Amino acid sequence: MTALWVPIAVLVVLMILDWTTGHSGATDWKQFLTIYVLWFGIPSYLAFATWATRVLSTLTERQILKRVWYAPLTFIPFYAAPWLIGGLVLVLLGNLGWFPMMVGWLAFLPYLLIAGYVVSGLTVALYRTVFS
Image (cartoon, rainbow, N blue to C red):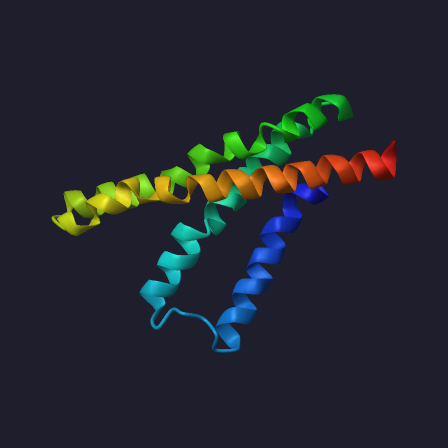
């Protein structure tokens, strides 16, 4: 469970440090929310981690190790939902400029999968090193 919650803690700490030191590329609150909420997927990961914690609490260690490899693929719907819902709402409200944002999450998908499998691999390696 620790490996599930550490990435979000690190991301939030880095986000706060970035914002407070003035190194953030975001110039206003709307841009800041777009970058961190959509691009980095902080609320999406919180929803995913909460759901995964609930699901994994009923499984054995062996089953959890198998599920770790599916985690990056399982995260995709959680990551895509804010992009699709937000873009759809804005398009329905008449702002057609947000239509590309509905599919913008696809551009981040390769990075999401690479980072996810790196973290999954490190998690399994660390578990096997420490507990086997």
